[in-house]
Length: 413
Ligand SMILES: [Zn+2]
Image 1 (spheres, helix red, strand yellow):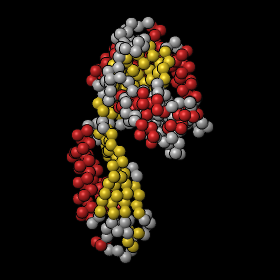
Image 2: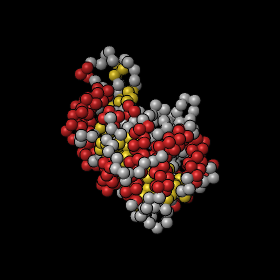
Image 3: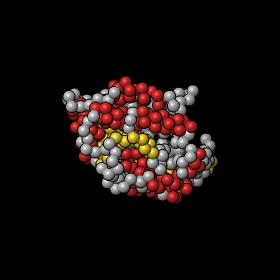
Image 4: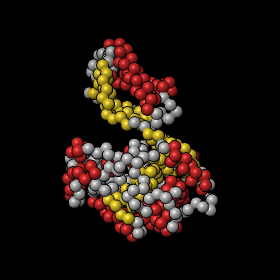
């Protein structure tokens, strides 16, 4: 490692990660810090205390995003790093929390070392990344994407509205409309996160430099034929919806090979056959199709190719088909300047790294709409995430924290 590279206080970092990991933990060992739940509120209080204890400036915006600030003057565009401390139900201890605690540790280290910096720094924990009320709420508020309609419609699976959940904590959800940052006020954004996939673990490298976050489209497809007696309907007189689905599934590899890129994925994750009896020819097959790629044009071409394939199969088999678009998210490329700075920090550290893409959504994807953004990944043991089995080796966590620290130092210098 170059002598100029800074190092975080590994002991303090570990204590913070361990302390936060105990908050919202249930007997099943999973963590329950869904946004504005009791666990989340204790986690927020813990984070605010750690920020004030460190002598950094505490700030909370209208979307209840919590920040630590260093050298803040309210004028100079700052360098931001962060993630989220809310979790899915039964979560592991690193998804989101790692990025927040390491960003805080980076600011504490820069403050203690008295590093001369040209730009202010901010470590931020975004509200409801995981989606109790829809997801990516805090970062969308910062990016100016939260509207009164959004606030009006946001509710959880039990019908609790975001407005009520915030009011219960003494917060006014309408304040989120004022959490938007002025254009140009964020010089750069960096998010450290666990990979949540198996690539780095398999390769045995400590650091992933994220080139792009994938976009996706999700369809619900219905193939309709005729339900009939499995014994009395001859094979050549059937309109078997499942046979259509099976043929389509068999075409996925070909379509990806012909029209996709090297990182394209397509998944049928849910299938329902109607009526769904062993002795009845299925009259309807309803199934999901999730397609992802980091290139927008490739996603469009894949969408058309899958539609043509469905059409041809339906025509040949005497089936009707329709599909509903459930969601569409555009892919985002990391900012070249941020990727280059992360690469510099990696090179100076002498650590092993690999460039890769993110298959999951992150706050970085939203902030990329208003500021140059990039991400650093550390390995997830066997790719496990959204589970209590989530695990990253301490050496990798420390490596990731140091790369974040030295990336922020470079961006703020
Ligand atoms: Zn996350």
